[in-house]
Image (cartoon, rainbow over all chains, first blue to last red; front, side, top):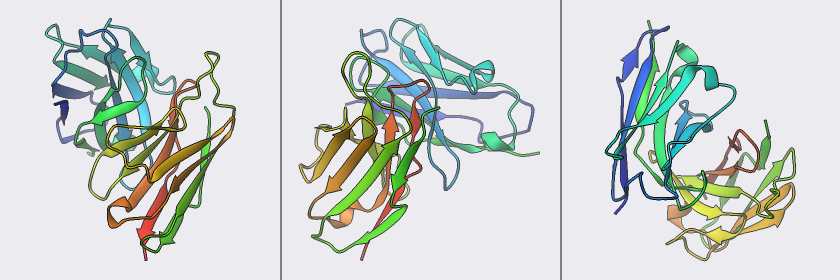
Length: 121
Length: 112
């Protein structure tokens, strides 16, 4: 059974760096074809694809945010991380991690429950 | 970025009736490999999005055959036949053909 769970700070101040963790089970990110993505959703709004990392360590970023994003994975291939630098109020959102079905960065078949991040002074 | 325009913004459907949602793209979603990376997700109230349809018309495992995706190029449709109470929520289309992947603005399905 594939499960994913996001964790984060809950709240942080503007200009800080946001660090998020996606912990998962039921698969290994070292398996060929596996990809984990990050997607966020401001309250009451649509979704925004942010970044992805695949089994081979290749990384994919949304160009509009690329300069602020860093996606990585741990050596045990059971966690994926996302860092967003210089956050501001517009980064307030629920952040989801998701695993794709098989090969490629899409479709996102398995989702975590999301973690709410509030940027506020 | 590719803009996905969903219509209607909301719709109210009687149980057992059909619902239809349109997703129009600002660019063709057919990729050079011949595939069209257009997906549909449902976000039920208080839940994470869940995958319904991928590559225009392929139902994800466990998705009832009441959900039918169709379309090509720039015009896509999700039809839900015989709407049931558990179908309420916000439906999003999503494209991964062009970088960056983008979501539509959503269509809220309510039950009359």
